[in-house]
Image 1 (cartoon, rainbow, N blue to C red):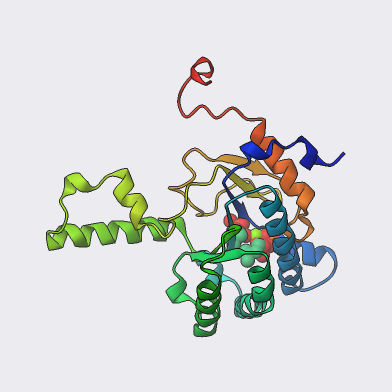
Image 2 (image 1 turned 180 degrees about the vertical axis):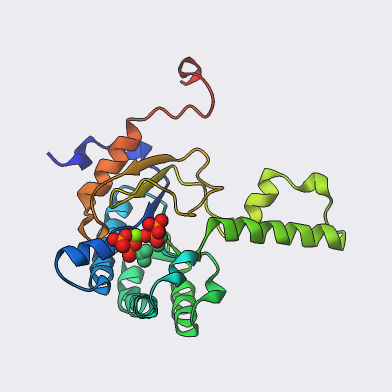
Length: 246
Ligand code: IPE
Ligand code: IPE
Ligand code: MG
């Protein structure tokens, strides 16, 4: 029996974030270069997006390139940037047909110009789509994001347009690149690694984590359903005790 029949669609998470990991190991296992795995990873993104849409998820955030990933060999970084441009160009019609809004988080100004242009074009084209938002985390690092938010607040205080009492959780949230996006209820990481790797540190304060051994290129709709079922089996207490929850 498929896992989807067991999911309560009325209680689907509104926002799922995914650390797509294991492309390199997947490629290596089959005797290929790492980029071969990244290419197949795009297919898994396509399938996951479709499945998330069916589950009535509003936001799907995918960690596609971390600030730390610039430290990889140049050939791999160039290949990833090239893959990004080709994938966006290749998928834009499908994104439009299926009502997907493309968004990005992270320091996108630090991406190569070709990537920035392709992304901006796709973001503009899809901005009025309403079925699901696909949020790509690109050149993203949570510590960068928080530092950047602090700098903006410091500047406002320096300019006298804000005072220190106004530095609230809400004010900080508004300065993050995720400002318009609700916090994820569920975070999935593939490939058996059980760490956060500088992803959404502020936003995951009460997020449920699901770790799976599946390598990202092998990730299928069924794996997403499994993660959502796992999420639905949890009791989210937000600091309270069980009896206080209704
Ligand atoms: C995740 O797969 C994709 C990116 C980080 C861009 P990896 O490339 O990290 O694959 P592994 O972890 O080395 O197997
Ligand atoms: C996290 O994966 C970043 C992305 C999935 C884009 P990494 O493979 O880069 O993380 P570490 O190095 O294993 O922590
Ligand atoms: Mg990895």
